Image (tube, rainbow, N blue to C red; front, side, top):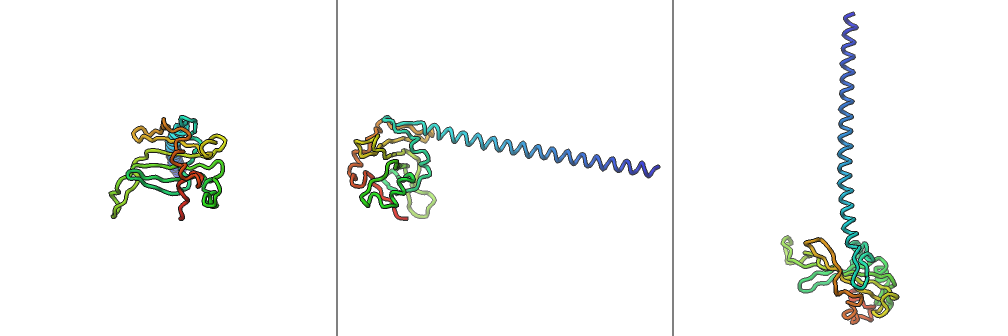
Length: 206
């Protein structure tokens, strides 16, 4: 009889241990799930914020109606070339259609860039690097995006190219269309390279 009681008590204790362990596992599972959901919520919020920022930028239009959204994705376009003035560093990028034309020999083969070609000149203030062991100037604050798009029907008077400028203010982290950037705003300068389909920068060898 005593032996049966002992076994019953031992069995009860074992069952309690199993129940306690299961409870801990459930709590741990809930904790992991709650943490994962919290992390997911943060990531979604961050993504939505970034999307809002892009949507805000891409809602802009120049005074003559050139939409910044025409150049959506320019941040990841291939580099064509670079340039520098006394105080500004510039990187020139182009969309896939224009890069393909460059690689086919345009404009050196006397052929024009195809309709839909787009090119952007991204401009930063420059600063002297405090890390490099030699004198070198690097981008500091973004100041402006100068863009061009080829659409002969929309821009027949300027060699088929439309121009626009979007200024960037670092303090507000906002772009604004330049009030003076009409669709022909770059024509005065670019007519000097009419023979190259109004494009200054060749595709640099790499």
